Length: 162
Image 1 (cartoon, one colour):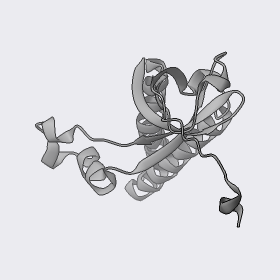
Image 2: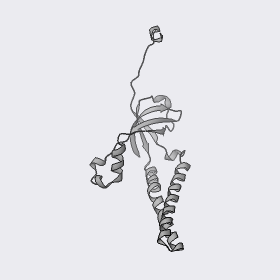
Image 3: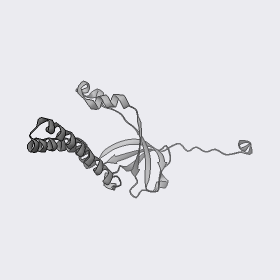
Image 4: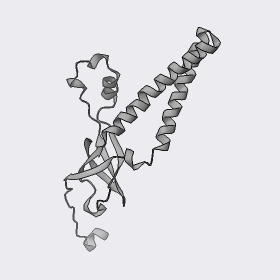
């Protein structure tokens, strides 16, 4: 399981909305100057993301706004997602290029076939994401509460209402 910590921003009967802060470990990597991920993390580092994490049978009453919780995603979700996003468009591009080259025997048409294959691969990624958007096996899950939010109590007096 891949885990991340976040702060509860909303509570639903079967899920929590959790705000996480994207952090980067690229400063420890030896390939930081030649990596696109490092560049993207420098541009958006510290950006807050909100995601819905399923409770899977836990009582929503035990969670409060501003609690710090640990959420997890199964490794197979990351592996399947990476393969879909990175490999499928690449393979579709190569297939499109190969088919165009084979049937039309032109480098220009092979380039067009590669472009069409890439677009088709990106479309398949979009279809896969749409079909699995509500699949509970692909959703983050709340593991546990790390720290409780401080209880804020305020006793209203008649002066507060005036």
